[in-house]
Amino acid sequence: MKKLSARRRHPLAAVVVLLLALAATGGLYAAFAPAGKAQADETAQSLAIEEGKKLYAVGCASCHGTGGQGTTDGPSLVGVGSAAVDFQVATGRMPAQQPGAQVPKKKAIYSQAEIDQLAAYIASLGAGPVTPTDKQVDPAGADVANGGELFRTNCAQCHNFTGKGGALTEGKYAPDLEGVSPKHIYEAMQTGPQSMPSFPDTTMPEQEKKDIIAYIESVNGDETESPGGLALGGLGPVSEGLFAWIFGLGALVAVAVWVAAHTAKAKKS
Image (cartoon, rainbow, N blue to C red; front, side, top):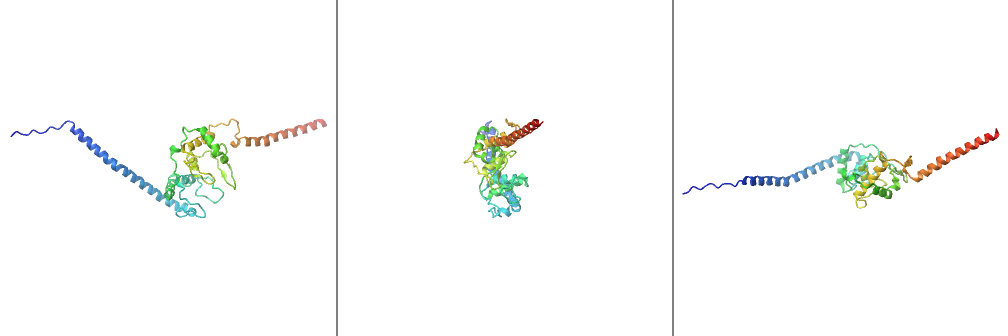
């Protein structure tokens, strides 16, 4: 019998086997890695909610109820979302020191990490506006002119034309927007804190919010110049007219009295 010759392996066979192995490895990674990452994210979120619940029990439950349902001393927090928590707590308005017509801004007592945990817990009570990302609040490339038009239409009635703030009824007031971070301005438009109406994305899209932020930064920036000199609170012709009447007319009256007095002395002499 003739001896059977061994079949020769094709030179590319090893390459094919290697590619198949890599494909199998990649398939396994694609199958398991996203699930592992999702599970890790879910675990981290659960921990944040748990820590936030502890912080809430100490600093918030006495007014807003043990489950965020609200009491006679504080409104319900179900459905307010993480954006409202970030705005109120990061600006120091919450926890409130004492009841009043309006809760003022003050130094925050929680770190940003603790605020994020509180926000996670409150968000778990019911869906609501979500804390915006840095990209959402970045005014780079925004339309300042459109932002000015939107601001004068929707905001100037309370905050005046340049965001300097103003008095409202029953002891309330619209705060000065100078120096307020873009994130907190965005969150205020999302959630409508205190006397302010809310402007969700269905009413005012994200890009329009960015335009308004760009306008506020433009008129209150360090490099902004007032062509009229003294800004007088940025209230426009009303404050300028009042200034003219009080100081201008007063100066004219003083000059007239001085001239009359000196003229009388000159006649006597």
